[in-house]
Length: 107
Image (cartoon, rainbow, N blue to C red; front, side, top):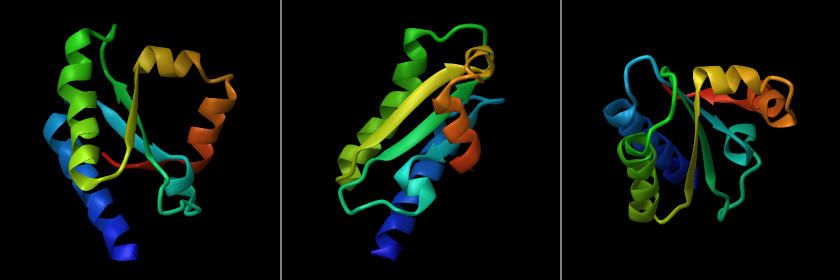
């Protein structure tokens, strides 16, 4: 089980290395980051891009390859994208606080 989880994590990191634009950041959060995931738990990935505004092609080039990877691996990968400015503006939200506490930087 642990080796399967490590394989998935390494595959996610590799995909991020290939598809995340320069200056971008990605964090694993949720049950996989906390270590209390079940066999059917999804993989929550926060992606923060260093740009003014998210464009449709950002989803095609960054988010969708992760979703496709999940299909290939038989798991659900949930990428959530923000710009750095949007992420900073959400600092008062419980979601932000959770990611700051439990998030594991992937790239």
